[in-house]
Image (cartoon, rainbow, N blue to C red; front, top):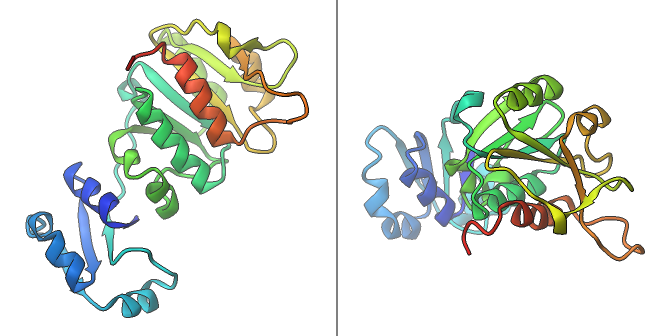
Length: 231
């Protein structure tokens, strides 16, 4: 996987992500020498920023990038008590923002499925500001089967929806062990998953607004479900 920007590369190193190679300008290398010199098994390449742009093929904001080993997904039993399930969320920036939201509101595990974007895409990692590295990650092959396994482990399944039968987030009573399910940007949560959910919730908003952006909605819902863990 590719990691870019100084702060995110530093967080990757601090979280023990295996760095295979670093590409940096001389100034960024000198600034981050304390961490870089600890990477005894990594290759280091120094180049001017304009040459770095030619190498990577796109504009870069800061003069440091890393090639790293993608962390292995965890097992379903390693996800922790608070889990965010992304059902078909396909936009890398939304996924990155949701990872950051999850970390901010005390969620330890994140699940994606085959119809969505991985949390280890370059832009996802950057938008998350490296929060992807501190989350347990599980890749679901069959969403319904995965959620049934979580229910068997006594997780409460909370699905987001715009349906008239949904409960307002103002009335959420989340159990200690729960999964918040956010759906695809256009289609929402898969109907089969909505049927499986213990609780379907909505954000009360002005009726002239169809819905919130998926990442924005996740922040509101995760805050409501977190029961003020950091208050």
